[in-house]
Image (cartoon, rainbow, N blue to C red; front, top):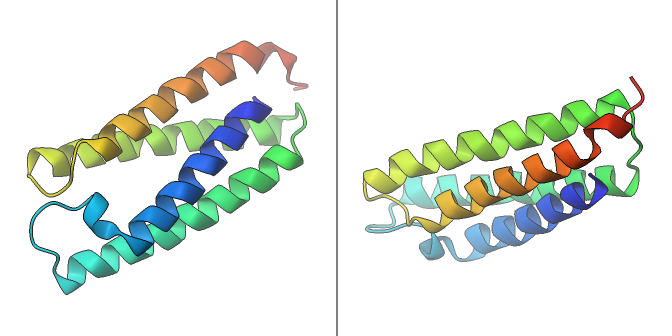
Length: 121
C-alpha cells in the first residue's frame, strides 16, 4: 500500500502543478476569471494533497490510521472522477481528468486489497 501512497502523491503533485500553470490542458472553451481562479485553487489543493500523501508514504506503517487515510484518498479519486464526468458531459473539461482519477481509484483498490490483511487493528 506504500506504493499506492507514492503513486497518488506523484499524480497529485504533477496534476496540481499542471492545472495551476496550464489550466487550458483541462478546461475546454472560454477561460473566464472564475474558471481560472477555480483551476488555480484546485491546483494548489492537489499539490498540497500530493505532498501530504508523499509524507504519509514515507512514514507508512500497517496501522488503522494509514488504512483509513488511504480509503479516504480512494473515495476522493472516485468522487472527483464522477464530478469531472459531469463537467465533461457539459463540455467544460476534457475526458482526461475522468480517466486519470478513475484509473487512480482502480490502482488504489488493487493496492488496498493486496495489503488489507497486513494491518494491525
